[in-house]
Length: 408
Ligand code: UTP
Image 1 (cartoon, protein in one colour):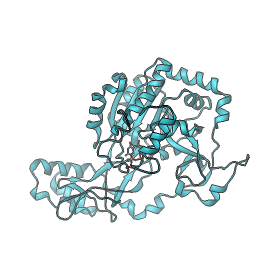
Image 2 (cartoon, helix red, strand yellow):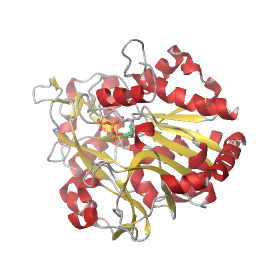
Image 3 (cartoon, helix red, strand yellow):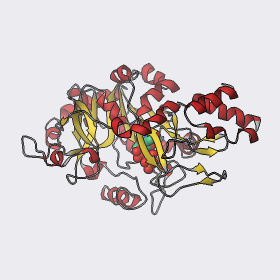
Image 4 (cartoon, helix red, strand yellow):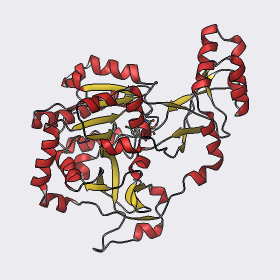
């Protein structure tokens, strides 16, 4: 793209301010900015004008979970099937580590956060230790794909290297980058983070499979005949990965997806809940649950929307390839976005000041035909670190780690 086309494109979308400093930039910076304008999809920004419409859901009905008592009855069967899938190399793992962790407020990737008290215990370390448990149990290394973003890729790779991959075989770890999307103020004007660079942020956790394809790591999946990918978030320090029972239950029930869920602590707990939407698996967010849904009961008198997702899914690769070309809805999220003010000074806001545009993994589940919500014991498998203090914080996660005998 040349300068003239960049002017036309920014004018067309009401974003001319992006070129405000163009004349004072170096040749290299000019080129970088024009390139970024060329690569950026501005059409998505118009969506912040009809946010409510985008968020509309179909008809929500309950989806029964496979509960602990059901799992207990079929434990041996599931274990055998799951172990067999692991030992024959059919299972890979995908760590979603492209997020910015703005609520935690650390400049480094969330996985580098040290939650130790008397010794170093990094979030990435906890994840690798949990994965190693299964490697040791099965005698098989599991391919791990780590999704990063432009903002944290190099430092993440460097950290793994420095820590000697936390004892994992590095030949089984591949890093890939997700895409970025522009961030805007509340009027849909793109923020600038440098005079030659628009503010961008990772485009959400929904694009991980398309990023695996684009980056080429999908070849590793195909060459190794990996049939299932266990996708999980970076911030749950009790995350069980490639859990044989979970894998076995998903395969045995002929489901395209398995989703680990926990029983909600209260009917209005702030977690997304597994459900059916227009007859297909879906997740209804806590703020979308009406009073009527919160009070609804199933045939056993139990709450009908009672199982919250913990961002740990097992997805069938063939099915992922089938849905890869389908478009996913964009979500508009309010976040804190660093920006240049009118005097060209970089401001790091303390409060949300605009929109980011994200696709979410939960919309991917909705594209699948069948899903088994698989209950796990909350205190053993769910210790998310989202915030600095209070709910889902370092403090609550530390207490749960101690409860599970993990030294800090
Ligand atoms: P969150 O929704 O908690 O977002 O991510 P976040 O960016 O980590 O944190 P906040 O909201 O800014 O505080 C859930 C999981 O999805 C990953 C995160 O790394 C985390 O594992 N994620 C999120 C991505 O990989 N990419 C994204 O663009 C967003």
